[in-house]
Image (cartoon, helix red, strand yellow):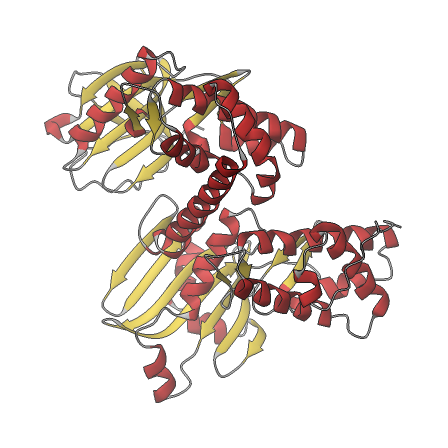
Length: 506
């Protein structure tokens, strides 16, 4: 049964908490029915799939003190796109909200289309299809630049794929100049787009630069490629750090944050339910209760699994050992907060890890005390158990070794150190390795520097120690690492012999 719509009166202090259908009466007397919220920026903007005068539209609703300014900028950006021959959905209507509370811009809904991020996810492991998508988007951005347009907000969600046509969205981020963009500014903007793809796709950078240069009529050289590669890395790192280390600690599209003098709470928005709310209010009662299955009891950390409704949740409580330990952690980021941020960091990079549900810190003003991290329980064997399982064939063992090597190589390319790669921190779910226990994980700004290479080599050595007494499994893993890393000297640092001749995969 369709949910009943509610009429919402908006004020400048609006909270966009509505998930189901709701309706808005615009100041021109027409009604907008928002059916599904696509994106929310609390107190500033809401984007929803909607119906207006019997037709499907996408509505951008701007509120707050800068609503008129942002709506005007969005309209202007759409006009620039249209004037310069860039495909974009038509702006059908614009209207103020009642009492001047904001503005609504209504755009044509392109039926059967999906944004580039969704399209990319649907391609899975099809490397050729991924490359074709990258080529098409790079060509679109090159046409932007040739037309003198610069999009300051180059996210994959800002491109809509309709068959062979690509629509550019979000006029708010469009800036227009009188002449085509020069090389320095253009390459920085192109790097924003390319940084949104997987780090392993960077092997295509030389080809993609050629695709871009062909549209622009440029000649490329090694220096231009180096500048592009450096800009891609810098932008990827900066965006990841801003999102995972800052944005998820304040209210945003993905997270709801509540601050009190005695508690800090961050909850993943799609995960909120009454059962989780009860856990957050009384974590100790659940952790110490008879329904809890204790996984770890230590001075600094207590871990248990509890069941609420149909969901199993891991609770990690980071304890205060004594007065001096409490003094040491009082003003620094808690280990629970690091786990929360690092889980979002890995998921942003497409690395499988337990879904973060919530973070709770007990505080006295700015002083932190106990902290709790809540994550979805990951039910599966760890890598040591999987390799030891007699029902697992040699072919599946080799496949698992390769997948583990690919995971470690991706961490290497991203400049990420885990810090504790023991076997039970690597679970296997549907043949894919999942990385757990993230409070020691960190990302380095200079991923190709000697210091990070030493740290990654240490991660590799710790990983291989899990099979110190099993030379056959260890040899299989070393072979997979050589196959994925190639002759990279970081393997030698980790004690893995680099074999020049090509290895057999049997």
